[in-house]
Image (tube, rainbow, N blue to C red; front, side, top):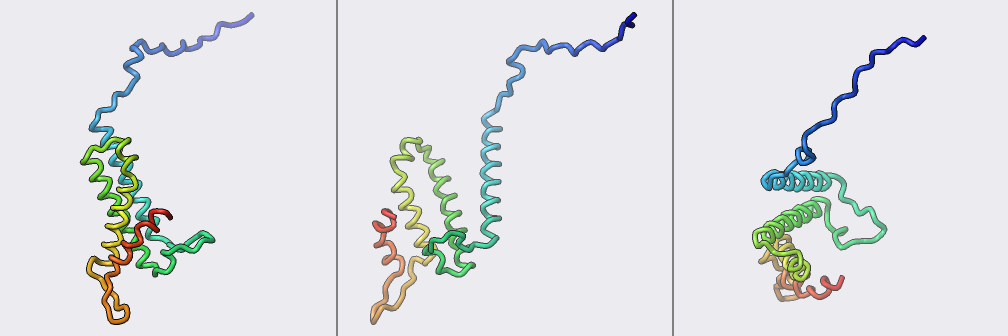
Length: 148
């Protein structure tokens, strides 16, 4: 003879409509998530810049001639300028299509600003008997940089 076993009844299924299970993300909350993500990304990049900046590839890069402190300075400058460009683009409310169409101009402007900031707008070197602006000489290489 088998004895009846008292088993607990299974939990009742929710009776709320499916829509109740969907979380509506408020625009402000989504913006906070984007800001948090951006902040975390920048923090990770900054942390990486605090570590070894030696070239890990077999390809010699132009930046390899710089001392570690100058490499770090240049990378931080690049980060700040990228952040500025992103803010400008966000403020201008540029569309994805416009961003794609203007990417070369945006990168050229970014490169020019970084070169000017890093070397100094008025920095000069003596070449023979003439003083030559470092930034002017580098900016003349715009086409070589663009095609690289």
